[in-house]
Each structure stands twice: as structure tokens, then as C-alpha cells.
Image (cartoon, rainbow over all chains, first blue to last red; front, side):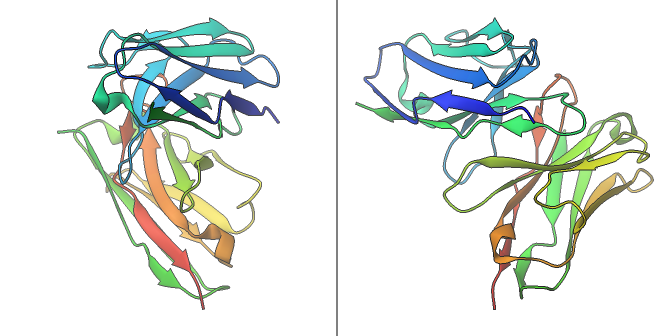
Length: 108
Length: 118
């Protein structure tokens, strides 16, 4: 079973600054890695898939990188609406998908 | 408008059963795998189950295998999650989700809350 580990658990960043979130897989997941944003009371929203492809309508300040076992989500200049919980997701992992435990991005 | 709408959640006693439904609209439902993902209160996302586009293949998380059954009716554009032998640890918001225009879950429902309690 592939385990996805996100770090840090909580990240405190000031608006306008850059945020860097990490996700590590216990074995290679190639580029089958997605990132989601979730705000309280809402369903997750897809940000990035294929490790680096922005989903439709996602602002350019969100970028993803990595392949194999190490992945990064970067938010270049934090806006107030970006403070949320972020999850990585290993998909197409038949017979089962796996999520990371999440990183809470909070205002410093 | 692309939409997934879950229903069927509620409060149920341990050991009892519940069936969730997820109605799809705005896309060719029969072309896509459908997944259930859950989130316990204050916790992260947990993948639960998947059914292939034609219903011929299903897979489950170890935590629900043997108790939950995922199925679909393409004539009704609906996916189901039959949950038997429910436990307190099954308490969660249950989301249906699908990879429609992206390789990952770009379409999500609003979620339905299942509470297992005596």
C-alpha cells in the first residue's frame, strides 16, 4: 500500500508571501498526483493534477512540481482566500486511491 | 451544469444499514468511474470505493471491504453506496466524486452526513 505523507501539518504564512507545501509518497506514483484545496463546510476543489497541470479556472499563482516520490505545491503570493487545508492525492492507483493527511495553511 | 448531488445520509444505530445515492447531471455519466470519499469530523479525506464506468469492477478501502457495496445505474445517472454493519468510526461526510475533465477528481458533490450512534 502506498502511503502519502504531507508536511508540514500546519504552515503559517503572511498574505503576499510564498507558501510551499510538500507531499511524499512511500513509493513512486509517477505523475499521478493531484492537489486539492478545502475550506470549512465545502467539498474539496481540484487545483493540480498530473503533478503540475492546473485544473480549469485555477489561478496561475498555484503551481505544482515533482514526480516519483517527492511533490510540491507552491502558492506564489498568498491571497486571503488561499488560507485553507490542502490535500495531495495519488490517483489511478487501482485498486485504491490514497490521500495525504492534509496541510493547514493559516494566516501568520 | 455539471453536478453531483448526494442523498441518504442521516443518523443510524451501530450495526444497522444505510444506502447513499449520488445523482449526476451535466456530463455523460456512463463514461466515467465514480468514487466515494469520506471525511470524519475534523479529520482528513479518506478514499472509500470506486466503481468502473460500466459497473463491472469495484474496489474498496480495507476499512469498509466486506461491509460496503458500491454500484451504479447508468439509466438513472446514479451511483450508490450500500453501507451495512455500520460502526461509530463510519461517522463522516460522504462525498461522491469523479474525474470528468481532468485525470483526478474535478467533480465533487456537496456531501451527505452519516452519523452512527446509539
